[in-house]
Image (cartoon, rainbow, N blue to C red; front, side, top):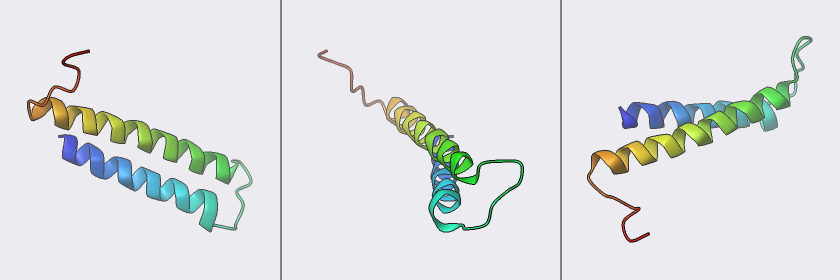
Length: 66
């Protein structure tokens, strides 16, 4: 499941970057760069969650000794 979440996160980051930096048309009802930034933020959060789920599933505990 973490692999599918990571693919979705990377896709969200990519689409957000395209909307923010590479597209020059405007929407009448939404702020295109803001939508892109929101997609990138959600993608980074999902990528962090996927990384954490992958580490938890592999038995690697990164919080020992803290």
